[in-house]
Image (cartoon, rainbow, N blue to C red):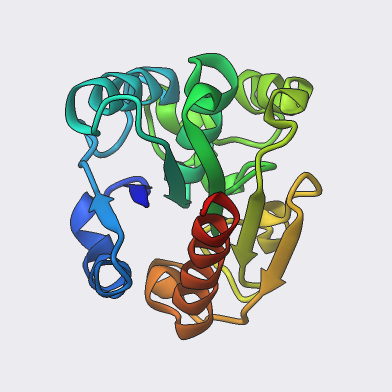
Length: 197
């Protein structure tokens, strides 16, 4: 299975190195591009447009893929799926510590990207209003009730997800390395491949 991994704000695709290694051992092919600029100063919509172009240029044509989005990357993944035609090829979405209902930290850094991540932002409200676009797509969500980056932490919860797990990780950034998260992603991808066999 092709797996597209989308990182969070102020970060790069390198954060997925341990998860990518585990998925590679399972036979998956991982793609972890880096957003430029990493602080999303122009907003999340341009990052989703980058994802659409990246998929067209870098992923094998006409092959399906699963999306894994960490933090801001989960919101970018949703925008791509719900507004830019990503549903045509996507087979699953996994979000990890993504601020589905926003974070108050969005008020403390300049730029459109952090404004998009504020609670009740126009972008987040638009995604909530168009969630029906995800009908039929397996959606899984991981979060931690100890999160200090997404505040309040419960804003990582997402009622749309078919499965949701609070893994009680101590640090937001290390959620992509959390053994329960990595194991869960591996299991969900294995189930996808079994279903399509």
